[in-house]
Length: 381
Image (cartoon, rainbow, N blue to C red; front, side, top):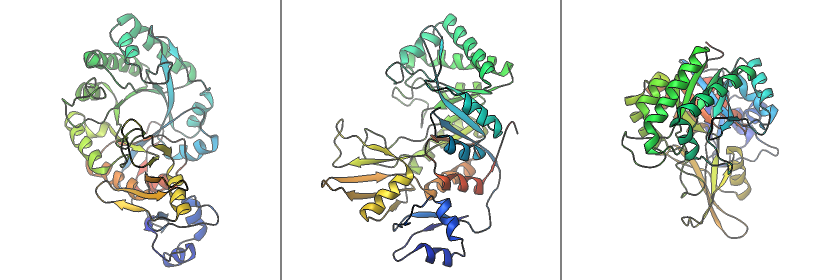
């Protein structure tokens, strides 16, 4: 497959003819909607009969149990692992399941030879990460033991084959206790023949300050876990200023540090499957960006007749437009060019693979490109 960037005067017929491609395949692969408007600067994935697979990788995707079943079914063939988001717990270590039943997702994963993973999070009643919950289980042996036992029981009953520990905002004072919690949990999971992974905030140094970073010891956690996910996204985020969600220059800095603490073959690169639309001007603590899909971003550009630009440093597409109410907007999102750049990073550093947050919205071109660039491991292979 190759990537084609739309130019002024292009039509689908012209693009198909010049690239000796099937027009219906272009429409399907890129999820184009009738009457198929094109945007200058839009990146299209086009089949050309070749592939560039060089090695096997693992791919993981996070999903809530209320994901559209068709979206999940279409995505599963491209996933080595499916992380169901999420199970929580109480201060005493009792496990709390997702509000929507996850059984059907586990069954679908098994049917697709994809490993189902239970994601464990310390989400409080307000839906936010709660570091008091973390402290209650990592600093109390009785609560820790109860939580791990409940995890094992639930995984056996449900058919999970792994657990992903996604704890954020860990207090610096809980750093070592958290590492020990992960080590003990890994021992229990390994005794059942299962795997344990952990999500890591995107650090660039061992002594990086901030509530997202100080509680996570890359070296200790990398040693305890079977593999890790670098959460290399959210530079551009809901309450921050307009910028790329996962600028490649910043992502690279995280990877360069991570491989000094964790073997590359244990590292999954985090990849965002979304973008943001910011109203302008940006005002700290006031402006709130709207989370959008990659397809929605292109539709907005088409609706307002504005070209899509590409930032060569961030390796990310973006554009600006003026809404009907006169307010200016700035949009950053992901396309096949930005994904290709991240795939090249996986190759360059010989990482384990990719982990997507999240797969609730289908972006077919990404999966086709991933499958074109790598062999995707399935099952326990």
